Image (cartoon, rainbow, N blue to C red; front, side, top):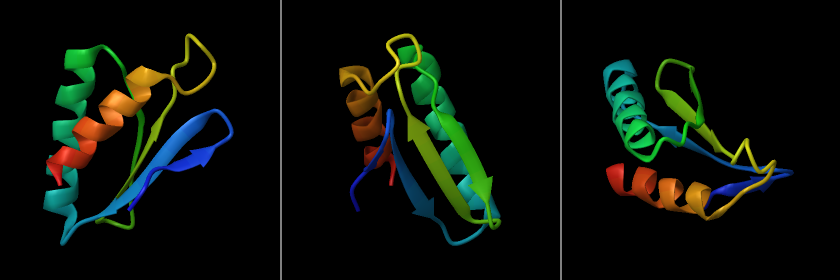
Length: 77
């Protein structure tokens, strides 16, 4: 599944087997984000779904950093 382009961000929803797997994924994304000093919006909803939204807040639009983090997030699943 591809990342969706929405105005000034890209986003993607991930679905897991259960809450524990979804929460583990959120924590892994957090580690990647900290390492890159580039922080996404993360929404854990419906107990097993995670929506990630990426934008470069300082630039006001999607940049290479967003695409790099998106690729790293995709590699987690």
